[in-house]
Length: 89
Image 1 (cartoon, rainbow, N blue to C red):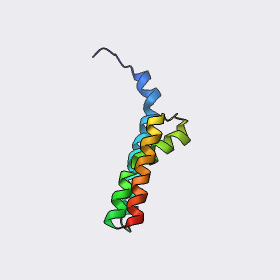
Image 2 (cartoon, rainbow, N blue to C red; image 1 turned 45 degrees about the vertical axis):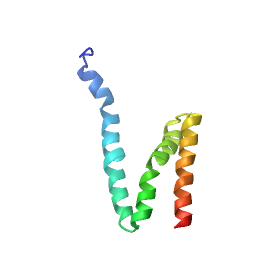
Image 3 (cartoon, helix red, strand yellow; image 1 turned 45 degrees about the horizontal axis):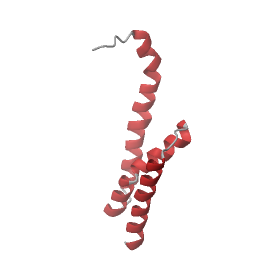
């Protein structure tokens, strides 16, 4: 309500929106659906729980994001939980 976006601003961000829509949503969903066809229920659940960890690592590699210590610790705990479940199963 406060901002007044212009057509120039929309044109400037349109490539980013298209990239995110096509690759961030469409391609990633298609790849995940294809990969899940050959996996069991437990393996699929573990991989879906690790999605946030994969996203954080990818943002660090691709975008140069700096991960806070809490984010690194949380990611390591999620990863450790997935590994423990996989090793016991």
